[in-house]
Amino acid sequence: MSAAEFEACIPFLQQLSEKRIAAARAVLVDGEKPVIVALRYQWSRQAVNMCVNRLWETFENYKAAKVREFEANLIKLPEGWEVATLAAPKHVLQKLRVEVEAARTPIDGIEEQ
Image (cartoon, rainbow, N blue to C red; front, side, top):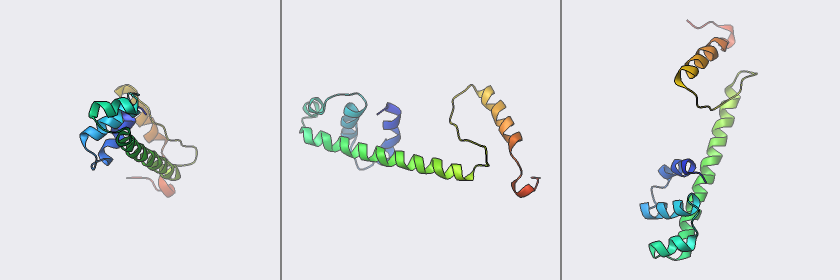
């Protein structure tokens, strides 16, 4: 799991303490072995695994929600359009926004005012 994916899950983990979240991060993001994390926090390996499993379940639900969101957005697109996520310099994105706006066709043939 990437650090960004992990961070995206944190708002959904209000019931987990900061220590439990940190323990899960150590395993899922930093690649530490659960037994090492358990020793650090003086917990059982099973307790660490419970934190990891809770985080992983949240991550799976988050990914499923993102897929649903993506699919819902696809339904609304005009034929021939695609969804893309990109990072680019601000001036390039501004040019792209202008081109996208110009490519939009009026809904039901009615010009916008």
